[in-house]
Length: 402
Image (cartoon, rainbow, N blue to C red; front, top):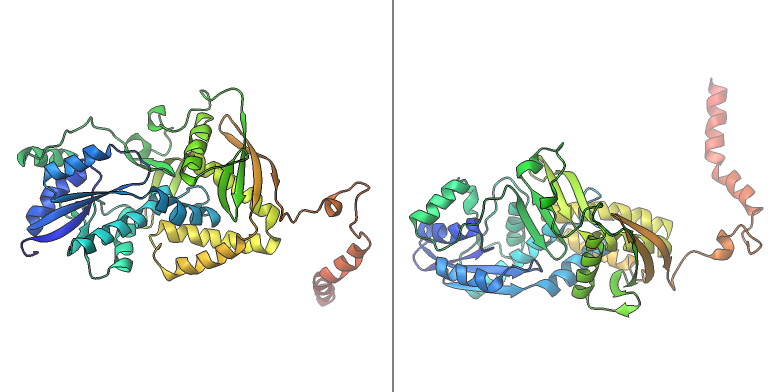
């Protein structure tokens, strides 16, 4: 038990779980609670969240605008790394958790707190991301996770709210668990736990169904500078507006729905639904530009790095020297990943129409089969003879041995 008047810093969403946690932590550890709510573009009613935290018993409620930091120091590095967990998930929630943990640690130091706390259960990935990030940034802090201890279901939490007169309005019960930020939405639980059941339209908020998407597609041009998107349709634009505009446009055309059976770090499979319109489009455009500007060997190795990078993010190891090492390699590959990619968005499909770069490794006179062809066809015979020599040698030896 903590001594009286010590402080705990709680990651606070404003929902039922974390509102219960304010009272539960204060009583169990005889401590004052300071809350931290990060605005990562999920558009919560921040004044209401702040007011609710204070009226529920928090001594102080911090609201932190982390959108710019999230984009520049988390989203763009993951995009440059082509990090898609298991080839599909753009890691929106996984990228947000270490940043929120960083905010918790910073406030904990300001408030001279002895612990940080979060509302994660013992079954998901987020508990690992919060805990390991905190261990990396401030190993002296205790880490508290009430939901791993109290063993209350929703009905019991509601009873707790009423018993202790916690001033929170209980919203309508929903079967889904949702997390969102500017890079994507994650939806799970309820009917989605049956992997054979198609998700109902009520699950989606950012994307239209293919049936409801416009019948006519739209073209979009994205400009990149050293692997980072910087412009739309020949106009330079700041990162937040770029993501917002691509999200809106791609979502209108039904792009960005992901239905995935995912391997969680804790050893179970889960059915996850994601909405990530901008992430889907930007990853596709970025990869198209890389194929134009990187050598075969660079792309081959980077595909391995991308796999490792996505696992590293998903598994909560953002604040590791391993991530710094991977970033060093990835950034070195992005020096010449500059140029433009044209795409068509239509009925759930994102199609690359063209790409151009001042650093393009595509040479028309070498690729052409027309009269412009400058490729030395005669040289191929000698090249193939030497290249195939080990195969020929082995075939002759095995033939003679048999």
